[in-house]
Each structure stands twice: as C-alpha cells, then as structure tokens.
Length: 358
Image (cartoon, rainbow, N blue to C red):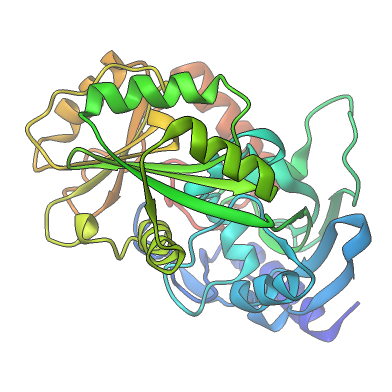
C-alpha cells in the first residue's frame, strides 16, 4: 500500500478506536456548504496523482487529493472534459471534494450524452471506511449491475461514509463548436420556451435566466450549432464574454450571488410554474434549478419549494438552525442511518455535516 494511504488508514483506525470525530477536509473550498465542519482535521491531499488515463477509452482514474484544476487541464490537453462541469469555488479544489460535494455546473441539464450529474459519470471508487479498511467499488467501465452501485452513492455524501481516496470517471470529448444566444423574455415565457426547446434535437449545453434575460449555450458539431442558431434566433454573444458569463455562474462570482442575503438552492421540476416571490432569482438547468436570495424563513422557502414539487437547500449564509437540507421522511432517514452505521460504525466521519444525527 502507498505510504500516504497507509498513514491515512492508520489515522482513521486510531480515531475509530478512540471515537474521535474527524473533519475530512482538503482544500476547504466547500466549507460553506452543509452544516459547519466538526472534528479533528483529516487532510487527504497526500493521496494524490493520476493513476491511469487512456484518452481513447474516455476514462480517467485519479486519487482524491488530485487538484481539480490540474485534472481538468490534463483532460483539456487531450480535447476532453468532465461532463458535469463542476464548480471549484477556489484554487484548492480537489477531485475528491468534487465527488463528495456532488455539485454540478451549468451543463447539468443539456441535450444528448452530456445530460447528467456527478454520480452519472462515476464508474468506480476506493474508500477508507470507519474501520480504517480500504474498500473498492465499481470499475472503469459503464455496466448494468444487480444491487446498489456504491461508488455512485459517494457522490454528494459529504464525507459522512468515509474518505474517498480514488475515483474513476467517464469523461467526454470537448465540443468542437459553441455559441451563446441572448433573448429578452419574462420568467414564465423563458421556462415554457426552455422546456419546449428541450424536447427538440438541439445541441443545448446550458441555460441561464436572470432579470428578464435568457442566455442559452449551444455546443456540439459546427453544423449542428449553426443550424440551431438559425432556428432559434436571438442575439449572438461573443464567445469570450460568454465564457466569462458561464464561469461566473458556475463559480458564483456573478453579481447575483453577491451580498448578504441568504442563498437558497431550489430543485424543482423544470416545468414548475414561476415561484412568484418578491426576491432576486437566477434560473438554470432549463428551469429545474432556481437560485433564490431571500431573508424569508426556512419554513416559508421550503413550503414554496414543496408546492412547486421540489425541495430547497440553504446554500450560503442565513440561519441554519432549521437545517441546511430539507428534512428527510422517516423511512428515508432510517435508510441513511443504516448506511452510515455500515460504513462508519463509530460515527467519526464529518458528524452532522448533512443532518444532525448522521
């Protein structure tokens, strides 16, 4: 076993024996997300580096401490990308933290093979569990399996099940052509229009509505992008300006995200009617992701999300006493507790990061 990995396993075993809570933290770029980190710091960045990358197979395997920026640069050199366009939220982001947070960027809902979130591209993973044992799940190919795909379970787990030390991901070729279009339309018209476009064979790659302006990103073969531009109309946006726009949304440096008002992330059906709230909004994912800045109580925001058929997460700021994530129904909560007990019987990993009793 690699010395750095062996040392990490030893630290976990010692913490388990003494029931010392551990805060799994690499670059700390997602510290704001979820409930506040607790426990003794466990930094997995010593377990780093690309293990295997075969561009012709569209698969990369990397250790969890690998810099996300460096991994994306390597893929770009071969004309490839992480399809889910993950946010970094800072230069210290690692691929392990990317998987544990489970956050996807503007490309999360799009046409064709790029449709999907983080877990849709996880092929396999290695995990150090709460006993200090190294577990391996999945592999390096897409396949149908009986039972639950544990490697994908790690996406969005926020480190409560164990320390992710290696991950294999399916990657995709970068688009040969891209173009962003700009339209003026209301929220209602934008959501209806986006859902209509989503049902057509268009090379949609991202959408953004804010303050009665809709931006639509097209990406794919040059002929497909050109044909879509001719069908849809709108105003062409310079590619340099467009790239800056999409990066600002992904990294939340867009002006909408500035300020002290709490930021809520509302996940609803793409066809959900406008929320009709007197608060700033930014809409992504063809209407399925609605960002809201409001001082309303958690109960009020979550009630609005429930009425729309979805749920709401307090993403940044605000009073977290009512919980960051929407409370689980009792049967689902029981499943979460059983999973936690199987992987982390001493309850040492990132205690309370998602829910108080996990």
